[in-house]
Length: 255
View (cartoon, rainbow, N blue to C red):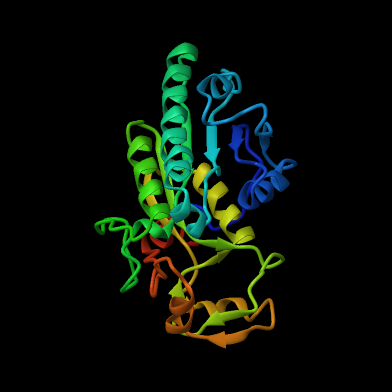
């Protein structure tokens, strides 16, 4: 088991979506890990040839951070959401299968998913709970998960994260509950998982708290409510998407 510290290892990582919020933070670990992170014009998950061109015999782990993640934008452009969050993932799965046969090797795919695959109403969702996504974003990500499960060696991380340096909101709800985790802590846990033998689906997040409780630590915010936000929105607003993270705690608790 791992207690949370990260030691340099000999695994070679390919990061997909390195230009995004999560991917760009993962790249900061390049001095500790052997990371390859080609830009989108060199690796595009919608073009399988570009994926194959970046997988060589030395790649052990692929971390897929790519995705179309803006909820409202997904509702407005569902075709693009499914193209990137599902079809692109299917391309990646196919490329991994081809590469494993070509190089006679084993590749672990770490796929970053979302708490939006759950119903997002009553909270405390476990990995074994039935998924009932309420929006296009969640539905497209769930379809992506189904493609990932075609592989024998995969890790699906369901999470919600934020960067304390990039909080754009002026207010936050006192009655919308999540298990949001700061991106630095999430990345640390991703690498801990990558060093383990665990495969399957796992929730990663912090304690169940309201958005206001979580974010006010980093920025001065006004209080609002789920009802007020819902009145102004034309998309589904989750009221409680908090995660049960006992699986991670049991696997990686400090001795």
